[in-house]
Image (tube, rainbow, N blue to C red; front, side, top):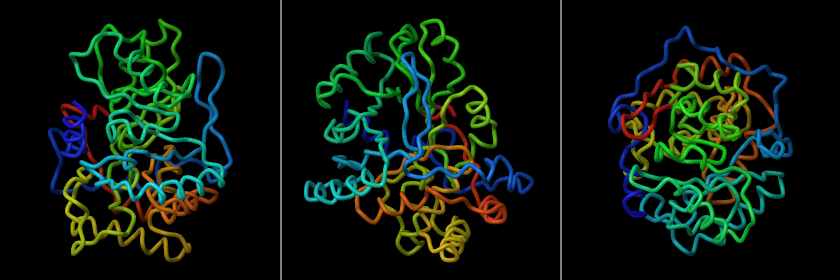
Length: 330
């Protein structure tokens, strides 16, 4: 099952109906510069946001470190020799004030599940107690008594609402919010793919609805699996396993060029600019970190804000994205 899930995660259950698109669809220019939080909102690495919870709010960073690459071989080609670099990167993040880690038993056969925000991926045949059973197993591996936030990747057994802890990923969050209320379970967060290469949740009003409902919106694939980092080019494309927002690099070169231009003027990296863009749009970015350089770039996304003119410039070269019939409902 783990291997099958890894294959599914890396074979394009991503940004459009069905599998993935070869051609990016631009965003209506009329939306340029819209849906941006006030410039006064400028969180640092030590600032904390609040997730609603039954026993009081959970306080976490405005940026989350994604653990998918830690131990995962099918998509990220993890090698045991990387572990020292990963530990160094985590120490840099921790020292800066980042305390929010996103991991799951489904990534790397559980090898990366060493921190405190596991996600569970389920299919339709699991019993109604699957989330609770999986959470208990995660706690045992983590050697913890509890986790702060527990997310479910996608739809689970229709009778299991009472067993879902506090969040959903990839699901239309508003379909289950009312059911969770019946069991005094606050819906704390909704996590979907969102980036310069997939603004679907912003355009359709999903982020705005989350904000109005006190639901923290998290963005995964915040860098389009590295496409927005400036690392890849038409001549040096990302690995074929990197399926989220898997557009041909030549088709998104104007997008990357705009990020590079702003980054150069700001003295930042393209990755820092792309992550700062997400924060300004109201998302808490989840970003995969494997090396010290990536850790520093993530930290440098905090403590400043893109100007209105810079956001408009990025918006004009951004991509809309869509949903998928099997995986992403939002």
